Image 1 (cartoon, rainbow, N blue to C red):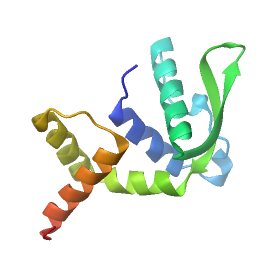
Image 2: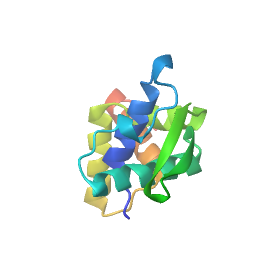
Image 3: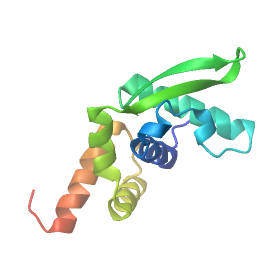
Image 4: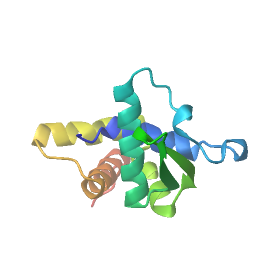
Length: 126
């Protein structure tokens, strides 16, 4: 499975927007019509939990894939990463930079490129 950075951004935003009534957000909170969509959300949530961006846990649903999950919120690092890519303008500029340069995206490089894009947009010198 290749990481879907737009899905990751969407998932972080959804978790951040949880209210107290939504605590323990589950896979059912994501609109998915197909098995493939459920699988992608499940696997991306596992990556975000493993990376330490989301407080949560994975668990099997009747012993089958995709796995379900329970989410309690974003970690400090999750908030920091989301803050770096929240703006649609910054996010689009960040993706464009990677596409233009032909580079692979990682959490660390995305954050660095997004910071550079913000600096440029603000007219600040690096």
